[in-house]
Length: 88
Image (cartoon, rainbow, N blue to C red; front, side):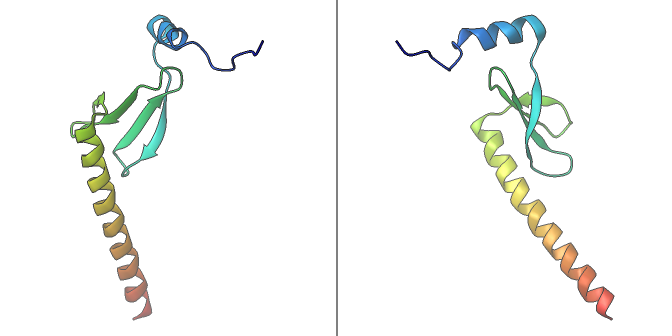
Protein backbone atom coordinates (compact mmCIF):
# COMPACT_ATOMS: atom_id res chain seq x y z
CA UNK A 1 0.00 0.00 0.00
CA UNK A 2 1.38 3.39 -1.05
CA UNK A 3 1.20 6.46 1.15
CA UNK A 4 -0.09 9.57 -0.56
CA UNK A 5 2.19 12.58 -0.22
CA UNK A 6 -0.47 15.03 -1.39
CA UNK A 7 -2.81 16.65 1.10
CA UNK A 8 -6.51 16.11 0.53
CA UNK A 9 -8.03 19.07 -1.25
CA UNK A 10 -10.34 20.08 1.59
CA UNK A 11 -7.64 20.44 4.28
CA UNK A 12 -6.07 23.63 2.81
CA UNK A 13 -9.52 25.16 2.36
CA UNK A 14 -10.43 24.41 5.98
CA UNK A 15 -7.12 25.89 7.13
CA UNK A 16 -7.75 29.08 5.14
CA UNK A 17 -11.31 29.31 6.45
CA UNK A 18 -10.11 29.03 10.06
CA UNK A 19 -6.88 31.03 10.01
CA UNK A 20 -7.10 33.08 6.83
CA UNK A 21 -5.00 32.93 3.70
CA UNK A 22 -1.22 33.01 3.81
CA UNK A 23 -0.36 34.99 0.68
CA UNK A 24 3.13 35.25 -0.75
CA UNK A 25 4.29 37.27 -3.74
CA UNK A 26 4.41 34.93 -6.73
CA UNK A 27 5.25 37.50 -9.40
CA UNK A 28 6.33 41.14 -9.44
CA UNK A 29 4.68 42.74 -12.46
CA UNK A 30 5.89 46.29 -11.75
CA UNK A 31 7.13 48.11 -8.67
CA UNK A 32 3.57 48.55 -7.44
CA UNK A 33 1.61 45.68 -9.08
CA UNK A 34 2.22 42.18 -7.80
CA UNK A 35 0.55 38.79 -8.03
CA UNK A 36 -0.01 36.81 -4.85
CA UNK A 37 -0.69 33.11 -4.23
CA UNK A 38 -1.96 31.49 -1.04
CA UNK A 39 0.51 28.88 0.21
CA UNK A 40 -2.26 26.51 1.27
CA UNK A 41 -5.19 26.70 -1.18
CA UNK A 42 -3.34 28.22 -4.20
CA UNK A 43 -5.86 31.07 -4.51
CA UNK A 44 -4.38 33.85 -6.68
CA UNK A 45 -4.81 37.59 -6.22
CA UNK A 46 -3.41 40.71 -7.81
CA UNK A 47 -3.52 44.42 -7.07
CA UNK A 48 -5.91 46.59 -9.04
CA UNK A 49 -5.49 50.21 -10.09
CA UNK A 50 -6.51 51.42 -6.62
CA UNK A 51 -4.05 49.14 -4.85
CA UNK A 52 -6.67 46.76 -3.49
CA UNK A 53 -6.33 42.98 -3.76
CA UNK A 54 -8.69 41.31 -6.22
CA UNK A 55 -9.00 37.80 -7.58
CA UNK A 56 -6.70 37.03 -10.52
CA UNK A 57 -8.97 36.34 -13.49
CA UNK A 58 -7.86 35.66 -17.08
CA UNK A 59 -8.64 39.31 -17.87
CA UNK A 60 -6.30 40.54 -15.12
CA UNK A 61 -3.63 38.00 -16.14
CA UNK A 62 -3.65 39.52 -19.62
CA UNK A 63 -3.58 43.06 -18.23
CA UNK A 64 -0.64 42.18 -15.97
CA UNK A 65 1.27 40.57 -18.86
CA UNK A 66 0.86 43.69 -21.00
CA UNK A 67 1.73 45.95 -18.08
CA UNK A 68 4.85 43.91 -17.35
CA UNK A 69 5.97 44.11 -20.99
CA UNK A 70 5.49 47.91 -21.06
CA UNK A 71 7.28 48.30 -17.72
CA UNK A 72 10.24 46.22 -18.88
CA UNK A 73 10.57 48.19 -22.14
CA UNK A 74 10.49 51.45 -20.22
CA UNK A 75 13.20 50.22 -17.84
CA UNK A 76 15.42 49.14 -20.74
CA UNK A 77 15.06 52.56 -22.42
CA UNK A 78 15.77 54.31 -19.13
CA UNK A 79 18.94 52.29 -18.60
CA UNK A 80 20.07 53.01 -22.18
CA UNK A 81 19.52 56.75 -21.64
CA UNK A 82 21.59 56.66 -18.47
CA UNK A 83 24.45 54.95 -20.24
CA UNK A 84 24.37 57.36 -23.18
CA UNK A 85 24.13 60.42 -20.94
CA UNK A 86 27.00 59.25 -18.77
CA UNK A 87 29.24 58.90 -21.82
CA UNK A 88 28.83 62.55 -22.81
